[in-house]
Image 1 (cartoon, rainbow, N blue to C red):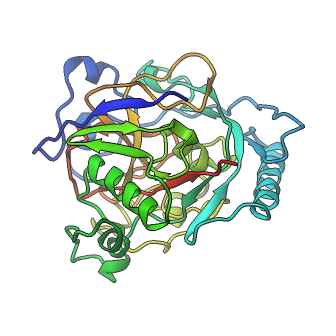
Image 2 (image 1 turned 90 degrees about the vertical axis):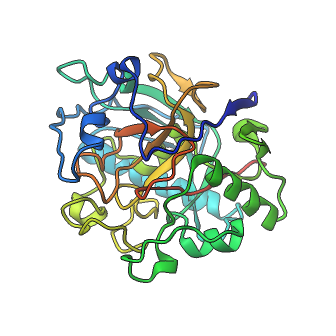
Amino acid sequence: MPSATDQANPESAAHKSMSSTFARRTVVFLAVSCFGASPGCKRKLPVAADAQALAGPAAAPAEATATTTGSSRLEAQIEQQQAAAALASKAIISPGFVLIPAGRFSMGVADPPDGSQNDARYHDVSIVRPFEMSAAETSARHYREIAGTSPELDATCSGVDDCPVAHVSWPQAVHYCNELSKRKGISPCYTLNGEAVVWNGGVKCRGFRLPTEAEWEYAARAGNAGLRYGVADAISWFDENASLRVHSTKRKRPNPWGLYDMLGNLAEWVWDWHAAYPKTSQVDPVGPIGGDNRVYRGGSWRYSDFEATFGARSAMGPGNRVEFIGFRCVRSLVE
């Protein structure tokens, strides 16, 4: 995978106003009018059609495939869990991380009736390599220990040190991943030169890094082709159950792969610059090589449960530090 070079674009505003061009491409879960409005703002979603079943190669025991409805979906999830267990017997997983098997899935959302989600339509994606992902969003405690700086804490969150860290810009999240790699004796994935960031080796890099947008959604879905992996109140913190504040990690039910708070609580930075999804099948996509806004995923305590869905995506300038965005790290399992 070739290296991707980008330029961070710090901004002082809490949330950058989208340009008219960008606004026309904004997805149905990502309306600036809603994200910038009161916490109770809601948007009506189109009913998501089931994704077409994708058959994984029989010769790839560690590959997981997202399928559609009923028993086929359950069977796929069982196969994915078995594949992860088989791979876990050979792989050394970092403490606090869970194994994500390689596989294929349909990324995005179903065709909306009004055409407003054109940049997030379903397309097939293959994740070639298994990777490990932090089971929880990066906590304030870990951020302070690894990054060496004290984050801005939310005093309303009980057990503050165990609360996920927010008010962290995209470059700060990248820096944390590099420092975690150094702590573990692994070569960092990123070269930082001022505001410029170079990703060395792409997904083949052995160090800790931010997930790509595709990796994030694939891990969040864990074989599920619907909107979310359970009833919103049981798996996520959003405006109506969060009392307008962030909560400590691992208090809601995890997804089938053991990941907590992938939907709700804090939204999460990913690697990609924001752009419309490609119309063709992709293998380990890393997004465009440049842009104005970095993608964040998952919804948060500040917004409605309509944003706490697998296909919801939004973006803002990478220099922003806001109270509802955090991050978690991943690491490719490269032989």
